[in-house]
Length: 355
Image 1 (cartoon, helix red, strand yellow):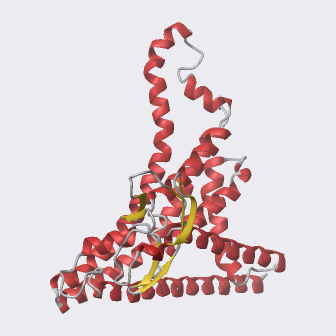
Image 2: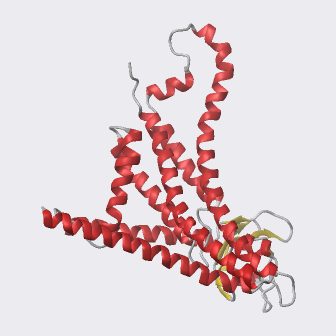
């Protein structure tokens, strides 16, 4: 027993050390990648004024190409459908000439990363953009990590966790015991796989956004809206008789229906708004917090090139370092908050009436 306790303590210490190394790795990579891009002047030509707004918008926006660092670009496939050409697939490099200027290709025009026809007709764009690419990368990382964790559980059955299992097991248990169980209750097991996937998907996506040249995946409102919509659909389909009776008959059985109808003309729209505000708050909270963090860090570092002062540069770098460390905390905090609120919504849907 004493030996097992000692092994567990060593594994916990090793896990803490790994987390520290992990955080430092992200910090160094972020600063190392940001400085060359900023030094290029926000993609302005030599002699032109530095434009921080263009740099920041370029970083937080989606794109049809993946710029790893200044001058190193991977052009992603464009997949579009139009009435004139049907389904068309080609590389996004066709939209750029030798001087890296945006030019039309066939009848397609790329304008602010939106593709449309030269005649103004609508184009259905299902391209593999930078955010879609990192969505796939994030999913692959999740599969690789947790297949490895699952193998660790089988290999170390009955003994102390080792390796990557020792790092993730306390987090998994915390999500189960401190977030999911207390908020959902006895029926928590049916929701646990989804909520664990949700937590780690958001956390890993937030961390990926701090890597050099990475996409602002969880800072994209389409991604956060999709996650929130899935939570809403599960909540509505999980709702029991008690849940729906609170929505359609909030005044209860104590009053006759003729007396309730005038009140329900007001209450039913309020209940509907209450249902819709839940996914709206999930969407905006995650999107705004992640995007704001990226904007703040890039704005602080941009001060160096606006002021063109070494002292301002040193101060900006130190403050950006602190902000980036804070972003590592925000990455897991936002995953925690999103999972906590989703658990609360599921718990409200399955809660039984208490007399």
